[in-house]
Each structure stands twice: as C-alpha cells, then as structure tokens.
Length: 82
Image (cartoon, rainbow, N blue to C red; front, side, top):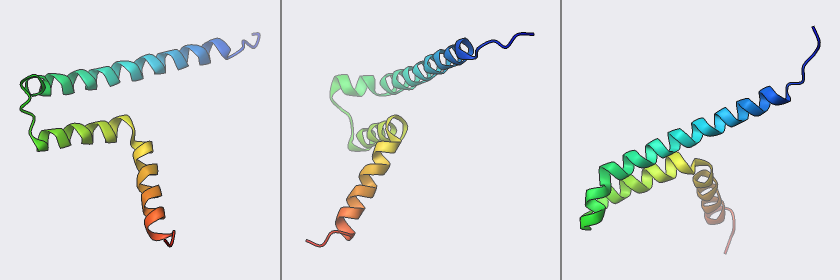
C-alpha cells in the first residue's frame, strides 16, 4: 500500500475544527443576545446583567488576553518601583 501524504487529511481536520469553533461561538453569541436583547433595546440593562455580559465575553472569548492583562497589571504594581 503506497504512503499517501497527510496534507489533505490535516487540511480537512483544520477546516472541520474552524467550522466547529465558529458554530459554537455564534451559538453562544446568539444565546447572549436572546437573553439580553429586550433589555438592550429598552435600555433597562442592570449593572449586574452588564457585568454578566462582560464576564461571559472576557472568560469565553478572550481568556488568554485577560490572563496577560492581569499578569502585567500585577507585575507593574508590585515589581516596578515608581
């Protein structure tokens, strides 16, 4: 049996992964908008609900960036004498 290159299989796996990630991300986006859409349109979003939206965004969409921001803030606060 001849050895086939893995390039098509790796490419298909990468495309499947990207499609899955996009689908799951938009599902979460739609769920957040369904939950808070009435409040946003009527401008009656409470601070607790706004904090929940920020929490969901920070911890699901950009957890690595949030981690770097906290680490840099702590480094600047405790390690740099000014």
